[in-house]
Length: 594
Image 1: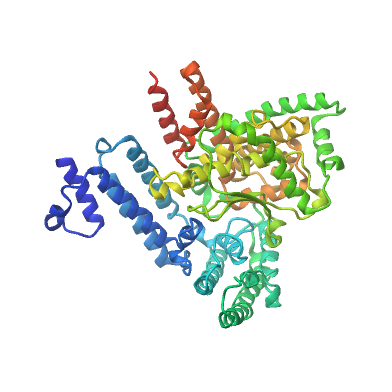
Image 2: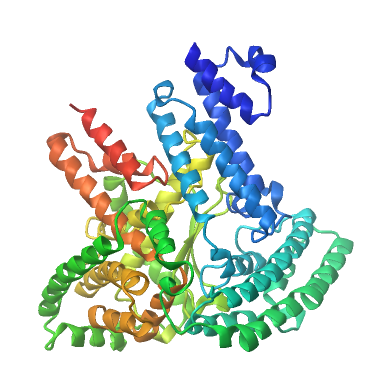
């Protein structure tokens, strides 16, 4: 009874109630009921704090809101939010909770701690880059074809309100960047020159051809004419009077002021963020306590191992020359660039899906109900974007989407695209994300939570299942899988090289060119991606190696009792969790057979 009172007291404190006057009203609640209520409150308050997260999840209550994520007032709210829930959940004894609740508590506390740690750095003085910043996410929403709904008149009105909030954020971003220029928090010049065209492309009319006009082109037929006319006029005014001037102003600022102040260094350690920020990023993205030096060595070892496997493929196809010459051949072989129309690329991915469908039931007991589509990456961002997956909504009404950039269809090389589909689509991100979202036994906050080491680690692990799924029959496709794997191993080397060992952009590019078959332009985009977001590139290989390790451990421990479908269910049913917590779960699963 004493422990129950402690838990209820934490709940009451969260609600702003006084224990002595309110405890009788909840004294009969079970611990699980109270704990579940706390988790729901955490999730609901998080959605209020981050309306974009709510929209992405298909929760439309806050679709007209865009808080100024860069303002000091917002950061104060964010800090208070995480500190409050860290205290509340930290006060609840594990002994009061069942294993699932213990996992939820551990995940939530890990999330609170890492977010609070992040708030201690002034990364907000570099709020815009060529790949990861909010303006790019917002541009996608503006197209009318992703998470932001445009089905009702209210939806259209919500977007007008959200644009106003976004433009306030954009103005603050400029102010932050100006302050960053005076304090040494600036992007490398090589990244700034990639950002400028992204703003320039949206800084001109006519309004009817603008990206932000997309929702008008998609306006439902059942709107009355008066609403259609009004919304069309309001969207034209929004574009002409607000969006174009804001984007034009940012483009001018980037060219005339920010670019001249840009740094020539490549790594984050050259800014006042120093190595402390990179150590934080390693922890955030790998969910481990590995050091930069340890990760660098893991990368070197993996690159050496995978190169040996690539040598075997080179010999199999009869290529004469060294491995680097083989890479050059694969990069440029026109036989591996068979397309003349972008629709053929989409059909190619559909054919991969059809080949693996009969095999999926052998490997997965649980499969998503959420629909799935392959789409071309939007033209406004495809020149600098990588292929990516956009999750479906929680209610399944919006499909999961695999986006692939096709800037030049005649140069679209297919040698590494079977493994790409396994990673970004099925059974990679689409399975992992959708199954978590569909799992009603998980608390809401865990159904949409994302940890890169788990999510990207799973996706890279999925690539290794190609042979089991009926793929990689062509040696060049198997080389593509090895190429994707060595690419992630190279990331361990070059990301730590750039941000912890003083490597230049050019040294990282040269190392990549020596060890993988991607084109120079692709490699340059990749290296610049790592420069913009230190540590993110580490998550893939570190997560994959952990899942492979756990699979081998389970097979060895369980012997004839090992069931690959059950193992995959154990991994995926948790949703995204830090790797240490995943390992604890698998260890408990193994122990349950003893």
